Length: 103
Image (cartoon, rainbow, N blue to C red; front, side, top):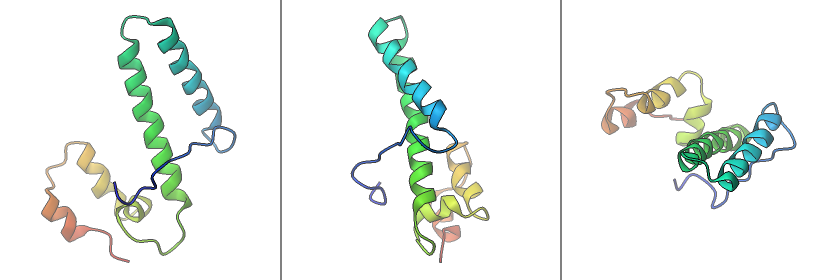
C-alpha cells in the first residue's frame, strides 16, 4: 500500500467509465439512505469496485519508466501474474518476487 498516494481521487466527470462511476455512487447513496436489507453488503461490494477503478486509473496515470508493483499491473506481459493472485493462483510471495516487475 506504500506505492499508493495517501488519497485516491476518482474523477466521475471524465473517462470511459465516468457514467458508470456516477451511477454507482448514486446507487450506493440510495442504498444507504433506504436502509434496505443487505444494503451494507451492497455498499461494501460497490466500494470494492470503485476502489479497483481508482487504482486502475492511478496506475494508468503513472509516467513511463515508473517501477514497482503498479507498473507491473500496467505491463501486459506481467499483469496476468499479479492478477492471478486474486483469482486463487498458487503462486507464493517468493515466486511473485522472482517474476516481479524489473524495469
